Amino acid sequence: MVGRTTAIVACLLASVASPAVAAEKIYAFSGTLDLSALLDGSVNPDWGFADGQTFSGTFGYDPDRISYTNPDILNDPTWNLTYYYSPLTKLTYTIQTASGSYSYSPPIETLAGNPASSTLVRSGPGGGNGVFINASNYPASWTGQQPVPVPASAYVGVYYPHSTFLSFGGAPGLLPNSGPQIDFAALGAQLGSTVNGSFTVRFSDPSLWPPGQERVNGIVSGSLSSLRLISVVPEPSTWLMMILGSGVVGLGLRARRASSTLVRA
Image (cartoon, rainbow, N blue to C red; front, side, top):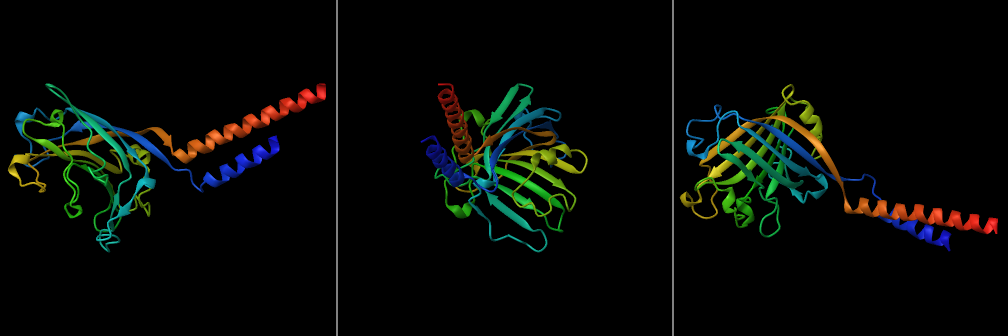
C-alpha cells in the first residue's frame, strides 16, 4: 500500500515539475536625489524635494509573468528596443524630505487587470545597453484603459505621481541576449562603475489636461547607489513540489518504522 501511494505522489511530482524553477525576486534600492541636473522649472520648490535627500524602495520581478511584448519596436535594427508587459510584481518607494517622508506604490495593473507597467530592454548598437522599469497610473493610450486613481496621500499639492522609472544603463555588451531575464543583483554590484542607475518620478496636474492625456508638469530624480536581492518567492508549483516531496519523505519514514516493528515482533 505504501509503495502504491509513493508511486502516485511521484507521478504528481513529475506532472508539476518544470525544466527551470522560476521565482519572483524582491530587490531593494536606495540613493540620493540630484535635482541640479534637471531642466530649470522641472521641480516645483513648493514640493519640498531637494538635492541630497535620500530615497529607498523595493520592487518584485518575475519574467514568467510577461503577458506580451510590443511588436512595433521589437528587433529595431539600430536600438533593438523591446517592451515586456509586465514582469513587475510590485513597486514601492519612500523619499525623505525636510518636512517628513513621501511614500507611494505605483499601480502594476490597470482597473481592468491589464498591465500598467513595463520593462524596456535596449541591447542594440544605437546607444549602449539599458533596462528601464516603468510603472504608470496612465496605461498606454492605445489600450483605451482608464487611468488608475491616485490616493490623496500621494498628491503633492495639486500634483500627483503619474509614472515612476528605474533605469540602468551601460556600455554595449552589458546585457547580451538577456531578453527579460535580468540579473538585477549583478547590475547593482556594478553601480557607480560600469552601470549607471537612476530613479525618476514624473508629476502632473490633472486639472491642466483633458481626461486620458498624459503630460508632465514636474520631475524628481536621483542616482541609485544600492540595488540588492533581498528575497526569492517560489512559484505556486514549486511550493506544491516541496509539499509533495515532504509527503514522500514522510511516507518513506513511516514505512521504515512499520517494517522495523514487524522484524522486532
